[in-house]
Length: 178
Image (cartoon, rainbow, N blue to C red; front, top):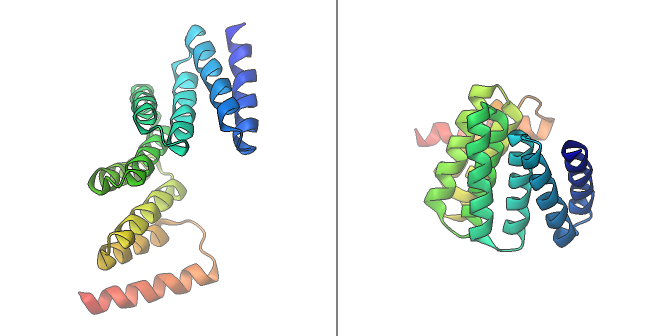
């Protein structure tokens, strides 16, 4: 019974989240997390905690977001789920970036990139490297931003023509600085 309840609450939470109804999505994810816990499904629980953390971050409840996301990352690590652990670390990076904790954000993005690479998920790795590049750009660290963007585009599986051109331009510019 708990598992069915968890799945229904999760689906409801996802729909509400997509509708940007964050208070009701949070309630649904919290109910799903409890139901997954009661069913002994720590993986499902971790997924809900990550979702809960994202909502808390969007609502600027940073401490609650960090608590939920750290627990989710630990549960994913214990389960050996590298892609979801990496995704959660990327979310932790976003959380630190929102609080202007640049060093912590960069560390979380780098750790997420490494885990995505180990898990063989280039799309995830590309995404967190892009986030790291944008973080460095906002800090005025232009060379570092270019390096991370080049890495992001290099690992990306499918590049459109504009992305391929941008990658060539970045490589040219970085070659000048080396």
